[in-house]
Amino acid sequence: MGIARILGFMLVVAGTVFLVMAYRATGSMSERALETFTGRYTERTQRDLAIGAAGVVGGVLLIAFGGGGKRRR
Image 1 (cartoon, rainbow, N blue to C red):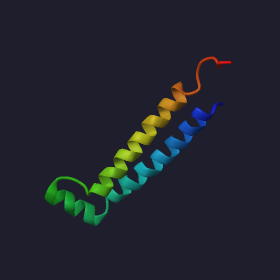
Image 2 (image 1 turned 60 degrees about the horizontal axis):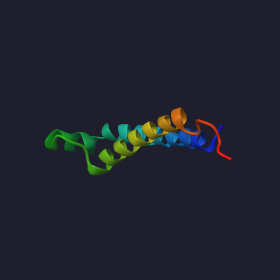
Image 3 (image 1 turned 90 degrees about the vertical axis):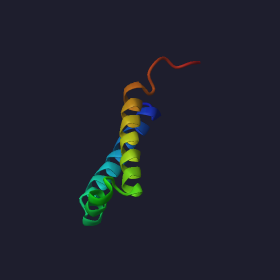
Image 4 (image 1 turned 45 degrees about the vertical axis):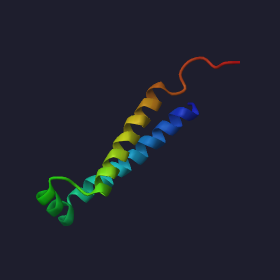
């Protein structure tokens, strides 16, 4: 297993942690109240959701395509 795939697994785990934390934050009373009045979440929650999604997608891509092919000499 190459370093790219190991990094991919690490990105998937970190992205999942960010997504879970952001999802739990969306259920808080202050987030729900803000969303009710403004129609969107706070910038921090939006940022965490975006970072988590990007980490999971990037990790999956590294796992799928990272380290493939022949080695150059």
